[in-house]
Amino acid sequence: MSPSLEIAVRVGGSAAVFAAMALWEWFAPRRHLTVGRRLRWPGNLGILAIDIIAVRLLVPTAAVGVALIATTRGWGLFAMLGLPAWAAIPLGVIALDLVIYTQHVVFHHVPVLWRLHRMHHADLDIDVTTGVRFHPLEILLSLAIKMAAVLALGVPALAVLIFEVLLNASSMFNHSNIALPSRLEPIARWVVVTPQMHQVHHSIERAETDSNFGFNLPWWDRLFGTYRAQPAAGEQGMTIGLPIFRDVAELGVVRLLTQPFRNDR
Image (tube, rainbow, N blue to C red; front, top):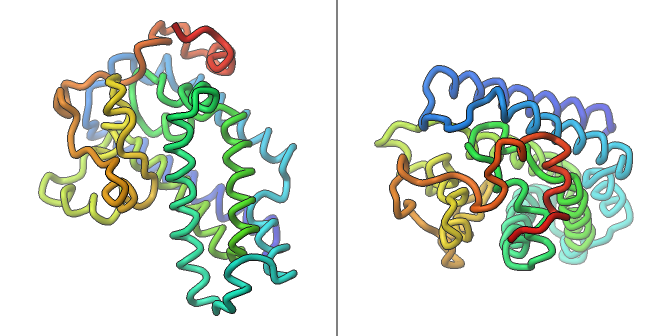
């Protein structure tokens, strides 16, 4: 798999999902935005640009490159078990999703990691751009964790690419300010993390913030007891964000980048 093909698939897929969610939000928003796009989008998209540059400059091979190395050299659990590709690919996608779920839980409960991750939660509204708003240090650390998991398991490169595309797409989808049909949504959240399900995770109430950690698959939250069906204040009544960093001045790129290093009291 050539690096140019990987980039084309990831960038093309992400751009298509972003455009679709942004249009859907524009024509049929689920919630009224308290701050809106004009103040939030420049900072959120600016952070995305910094993330992309940081990853490409510091870790040019990324997880797919590591997967190619592991597969070529026969490293990892899947190689030890002699799993054929038809089994290793879906199992690899599911295993990586569990790794990201676990990482997400840990980032909420280890104080120094929470300082990095809380920038994502400090957004005053939630929409498609919230799904790409992660501190560069968190992105790099998350990438290192994924690469370690890929090496340990011997996940095939195709599985890693599929997972990365799904992760990016699902993050934009489940953060988007859209509403699935009321009859479809309760069924859909058994298969995929829906926007209504993930919205609870962005509640200002800490007990609700520490729930619904899944990005792609909703099963882990139900299996490990971190699932919460609805916020206590109701879908329209809940407050988005954190008790700290609520000044609109915090929406600028420089302020976002420095949030992990500033007093959180």
